[in-house]
Amino acid sequence: MFAEKMVELGSRRSTIREIFEFGKKRAAEVGAENVFDFSLGNPNVPAPQAVEDNILKLVTTEESAALHGYTSAQGDAGVRSRIAGSINRAHGTHFHADNLYMTVGAAASLCICFKALAEEGDEFITFAPYFPEYKVFAEGTGAKLLVAPADTDSFQIHFDEFEKLLGPKTKAVIVNSPNNPSGAVYSEDTILKLTELMKRKSEEYGHAIYLISDEPYREIVYGNVKVPYLTKYYENTFVCYSYSKSLSLPGERIGYVVVPDEMEDQKAAYAAVCGAGRVLGYVNAPSLFQRVVGECVGKTSDVTIYRRNRDLLYNALTEMGYTCVKPDGAFYLFPRSLEPDANAFCEKAKEFDILLVPGDDFGCPGHVRIAYCVQTEMIERSLDAFRKLSEQYQ
Ligand code: PLP
Figure 1 (cartoon, protein in one colour):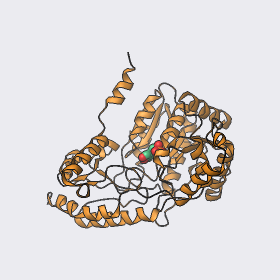
Figure 2 (cartoon, rainbow, N blue to C red):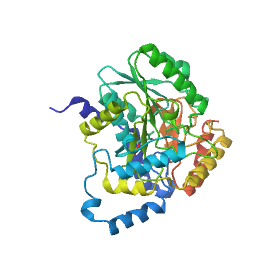
Figure 3 (tube, rainbow, N blue to C red):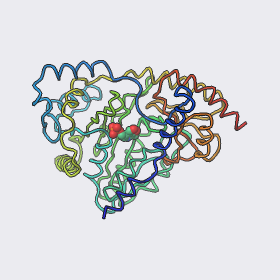
Figure 4 (cartoon, rainbow, N blue to C red):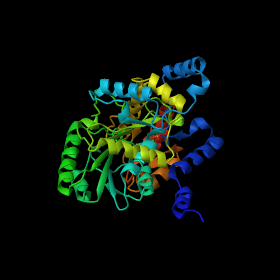
């Protein structure tokens, strides 16, 4: 027989997949230009030119067997060193190659950290709204994921709710800022409060409570918004990074985990990350793309396009009467649904060929996610449909 849990996970209905299938069907019926698909977080902004230039340079100048061969299990030392240097320049940290482990994107970075930490009965805590795969990844290790309800006025942290969940079984806390799906960026004040509370609780329970920072959207922020670098606030922090969004490379599967020297028993922590990578079969992230991201340190896709989309959609929707916390980053808007049941609202939106994801999927009912990593022209064409949708509720 097969593992029951895996069969269940593989057969479970996926809202986003269903929306995607619906979108394809409608496009065949009414034309792709009349379907407003805001369901996927797939970057529409192309990768920077440097990515293509470096792929071409590497494949035309380097010896094939070496370029495409195995690297060290934890990634090419030269690449890790370049990335460490780039983080240090940006954030005043002191990382070196052996603080980094190259992975196949943020999903793998998270799975590795969860596996490195979790023992049967451990609890992880995260904050709604949250990336739904956290539950799958955490439960896959035998740990339990607890979710602190959202502060829907700001999408910062609801500290009273969080404190209720912290207990002797808490192994780690997962944060995601800039956030999918709210677009919120945790302020320095939020980070200070969070880390002070976690330090106090670690002392009270006599063991470290780890912070896992899931940050694939770090560079996608607007204006002067700062995204605090969490290892500087809390020593026992793992950073899970990915180039899926910052360099628009989601299909290439490349990212890394940072295990800072400041972490308690750092050598054992890094060994646990290497061990988890081994158990999960995540050794040796793709060699070519390790080299490409190593050559592209400090570069990002053109964030001004996302900003233009955010401004256009946020301004238009709030003018029509939608209520929404203005997002400072990522490429999502997370307004309230115009009726309490977000699923019913998404069904109503489909009648206008607007495809949205209900907030229930992110642990935050009464809201919907609009992924605006789409062509600006599609947003412009969709506004009339959003207006007609809002009129249904007047
Ligand atoms: N974490 C968050 C918050 C995400 O939004 C995503 C992808 O959308 C991931 C992790 C997974 O990213 P990756 O493609 O790098 O595995």
